[in-house]
Length: 147
Image (cartoon, rainbow, N blue to C red; front, side, top):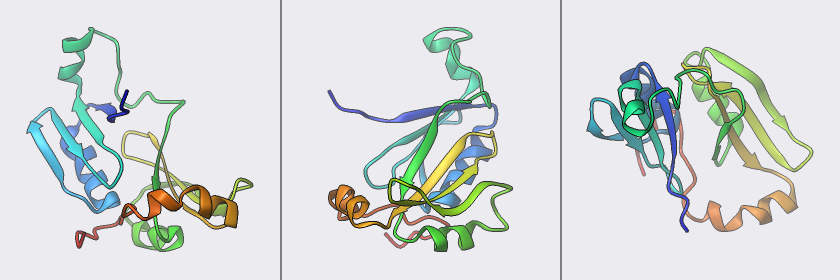
């Protein structure tokens, strides 16, 4: 089995896609006006409009109603990401903080209120844990389209 993507349901696809394009530094691939995918290294973030929900099961998902999932992105320098996103992100939940498990994390909310964590491993154990992923080009957020 392959884990393929996380899909976020939103009432405003264009707004949420624009936010993640800026925050992740990658362009979205649009399938329809109701569905786009962003593909930073190692993951796919799908963003779909509310009109797609009845295609699966009416009422099965609601936009801006997530209270349990944190979408996480590995970055080279979380403090730089914080500086780059200051003035763009409207709600930082936690400023860059080194967590007990060895990652320096920046927790924020996207325009729909979903939690997003950008993190950089900083302790030797955390660095080792993510070594294979870091060599696969981590996300370069905040408008860096040079990859």
